[in-house]
Length: 414
Image (cartoon, rainbow, N blue to C red; front, top):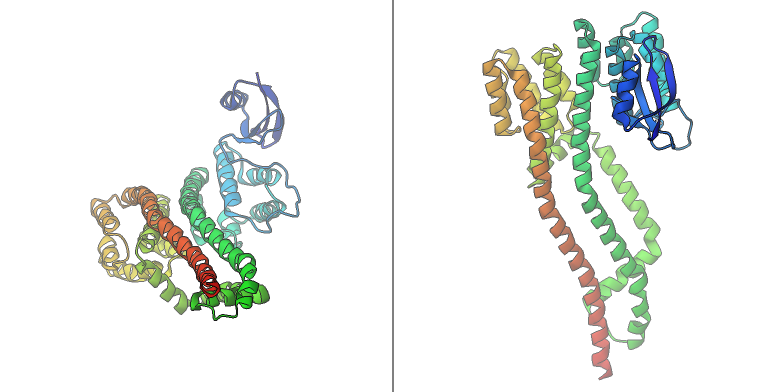
């Protein structure tokens, strides 16, 4: 029977560690809970990676590493939120739960953050006040959810719902990132292939073309010139690419440019549809979570606006908020923006009229999570063949231009 190492918290908030024999992790969890312990980590005795026990994997005491992140990442924040929820629901006082989390912090930066929050809480501040002073890590959405939980006296349960929302948003982001891996690899392979042809293959023919003493065909001349340019000015080309990316990102910080760019993206076939569905799913889930925790609709909309990445869709909520203040409702003004999918707008309108807005927003999020997967497949089904065809045409054009030069030399010999 395998041996498992465990880390758990007792009712006094003290960390207990040890080893037990069991058939699987679930048996270990049950035995620890029977002993009044709350398991936070379970790992095989052989030294395998820890397996989460009701909370995401923690790394134990903070370990310094030259590769450690200098900030608290989204994944680390998700783990902290879920662990804090588990400890509070187990009956630990807030300051003691934070003390436990400091010992379980995945990085020194996260440990220092938790220490500061614990000190503020012990100094008399509420948790939401302590988080609000660290807005670089905790968003307005996060802080307001915690404030609502404190007001309702159910902070542990509210943090559990918050972590569930964060987890679903993470899954949504990861699905989009995973879908883009293959196209990015394909583009990199195309760039590397073209560079290899121009820098290493084309020069092999230059001396032969020069000895022929005959004017080269225009396509061949273009390829030879490009090859010479890349061999001589490759560093300038690399610098130009880096500067171009930097300029693009800096220009994106200009509100006018950002709005124009996001508006153009929404009009791109397939891609615009995908962006709209991703934003709709995030919007609906975030607003549903806020409403479920007692935040008013008006306040929730202003918070949700800050969580959206497409500024055009976010700014459209200003008009919705204005009409909502005038008593014109929420669903119909949202549909009038023309930016949110009609199905989502109609579902929200039905939820508003039936008094089940929170529930309907959660359903919208579920529907558009699935729609995002379909949109990704549709987008990739078009993008991949386009990229492959473009790569084939580009490389084929280079090879054909070289062949034109060789054929011209053959005619000269004859």
